[in-house]
Image (tube, rainbow, N blue to C red; front, side, top):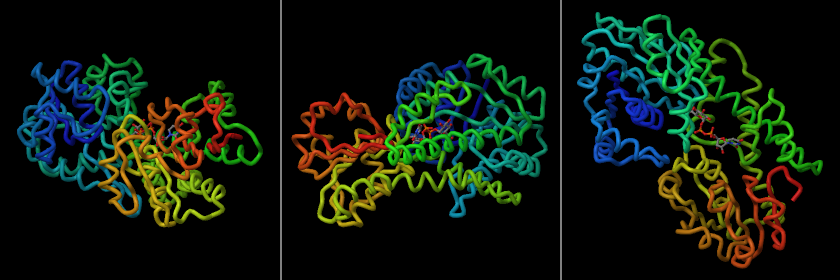
Length: 432
Ligand code: UGA
C-alpha cells in the first residue's frame, strides 16, 4: 500500500517505519523541518532500541521517506494515518488542535478515494469530527477509521511487529478488509468494532493498566505497615489467569506521555456526559501521592531534616530504555528535595539532557556516571530501574556513599543482593 503517516512522534514514527518493514511504501510527514532533516539523514530523534536500524534499512530499500510536504504525500497515498499529538489542556481534556489542522490539510490534498485513519489517542467522537471536517471541505470519497495504537516506549518496535491485537473501528466493510489485509502479517488477533468503541477501548486499556499499578501500590503501602512483602503478594496474585502478572510491579507510580494524560482525559470524557469516574479519580490521586513515598522515607530516616543533605538520584527517565522524561516521578521528587534545601546529584544513562531542558539547573549537579553521583551522598534514591543499576556492585557502592542509605523506588534489589552489606535499605512495600 501507499501510506502517509502524519506526525513523527513516538507513535507515528514507529508505525511508519514498521509499515515500511512490512513492504509498504510509506511517507512520514512532519512540520518540524529539523526533525525531518535528521530522519532523512538516517537519524532518529528519540531513543528507541532497534528503530534506527529499521529506518535506515527501509530508506535504502526505497520504501520509506520523510518530508514536510503533507500535500504531496497525501496525494500519492491510499491510506493516510493521523498520528499527531493530543497533549493535555490545563483542564485534562485532550487538545485536538493538531488533529483539526491535519484534517484540514488532508482535505485540501484529496485527489480521489482514500482511507483516513486516526492512530492518535483521541476522545470518543473525534473520528466523526475529523470526518465532518474533511467532508465539509472536499467532494472526494473517503472512509474514516479508528486505528488505536498499543505500543510501549522502550519496546515499541517489538510491540508493533508482534502486537497482542490490532483494533479497527470502522463503518465501511471495504475499508475494514483493506486494513485487515495490511495487518494480517502481524497477528490473527484483529478486533473490528464500531468507531466509538475503538476510541473508547484505547482509553479503557490505558486506564485499566494504570488502575492495576495504583492498586498494587496501595497494597504495597499496606504491606509496609503489616510486615508483608508486596513482590510475593503480586507474584502469587499473578498466577491467577484472571488477574495476570503484568503491571503489578509496585514502585513510585506511573509516568510517561500516556497514562497520566489518558487517565485525566477519560475522567474529562466521562464528566462531559455527566458521569463521575470515581475509581479513575482515585487511581490518579494514588499515583500522585505514591511519588512522595520516597520523600516520606527520607524524612523518616533524617528526622524530617533534609536541608543541607546531599542526595544521589539514579534514574530520571519515566521508565528504563527510553530518554522520555515526560511526567517522570523524578521531577517532583527532585523539586521537593531542592525546595527542602537539599543538594541533588543526578544521573541517568540516556535521559539527562531531556530532563535538564524540562527542569533547568537549580540545585542539581548532573553527573556523568552512577558512581560519581553516589560519591559522598547522604543517601541514594533509585528512581528508574536501568540495567546498569540492577547489576551494581553493592559492596563497593556502600563504601563511596557518605552513609550507606539506599531508597529503592523500583524494588530492584533482592535480599541476597544486600547480604554482606550494611545498607540501611528501604524499598516499596517490602519488609527490608
Ligand atoms: C503505555 C501502554 O503500556 C501502551 O500499551 C500504550 O500504547 C502507551 O501507554 C500509549 O498509550 O501510547 P508506556 O507509557 O510507553 O505505554 O509505558 P508502560 O510500559 O506502560 O509504563 C508506564 C508507566 O507505568 C511507567 O512509568 C512504568 O514505570 C509504570 N509501571 C509499569 C509500574 O509502575 N508498574 C508496572 O507494573 C508497570
